[in-house]
Image (tube, rainbow, N blue to C red; front, top):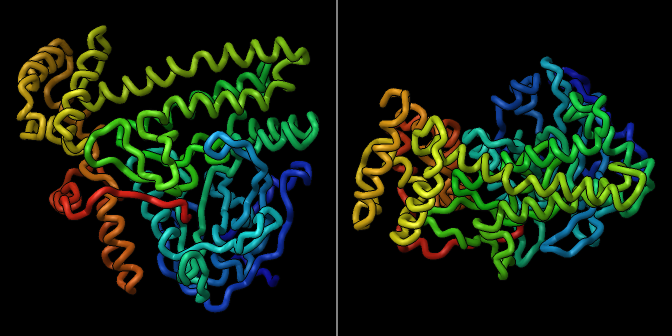
Length: 484
């Protein structure tokens, strides 16, 4: 495959190839017929040091038809518990072309998703459809706007080739950026299919890349477990605070960096119901909204298991160390979530009865089938909401106002905290589907307008009001599918 010069601002490295070869397979790209740029993220490109004008007009690089200077295309090996069942996996339709080195010293993975078959494809075609790739673009950028750690989308390129699922669909490739693609499943793969020496090499690489401050700790692998645990507690609490449901929290979809990854059957809740499930295949509700914190702890326990040989040379002591560390996760998550909920209610400090106040509010929201996002916006701006009809609401609001009055902070400071903690809009499912339907018919303006308002969800601007409206009854129950 011919390589392009570095004129587009590429500054690629390939630190992942410093790991033992068992962790990846170098591959040749799979060229496509007629690559055509569908959407390009100019702001993200600029932040990476890439020349947006040049890159936007060259769909060849972001389709895999050409390779930038320094690219070392490879597919990563990993494993994972998928709905609780452990299996060998790997990049079945993704190609890591390298790590862009930014001017600030960041190392950012550049991955092509839907780029064709790899040794890990398991009889799949390695391709992706345009609709799901555009959907990941929208949702990942919405998450970035909400200030939630996430992989991001640089571009979607149409391949000019059909792919076949139930029907023929237009093919596309998503360019995804990430702090790294190291997953809990990468460590599970190492623990099950490589040597202790190779597992150690992976852990040291993860520490060097994401947590260099712990490299000299007495037990740096315990510190790694604790760091990942903290990042995941923070991440999942942020999901819960905006009503986001990941939908497929398999261990191969949990990153070591603490970024949200793999936007498959994900969605945001409209009506508040803790049992909400959007995934068409999650019939048992394993990954329901309310279950996400617990599943995060379960996944972290699997991560701890993979680190046992590194935590202590004696198995029993290693298990004790791991169990003690993991036992702190529930409280760590609880602290993060209540901290976020206090901010949503304008509370700067802690009081013992805050938890009761918060839980009472959520109980009323569930009973009244209140819109999750709009309820908190109504509280922020002292507007009427679905809760106004609840006979308990007046008493709750009085207690909340009394609680606010006990703070030193001014009403203006309280209002600003709430504005900054309660988004005016989320990527509502009916709006996302509206944008995708228009894009399928060749009209990208609907998607572009949606992305524009999602870029700053805490702006609370006039142009966002239409996008804040919940879906009408004609939209019916929402279901998502593992098609990405």
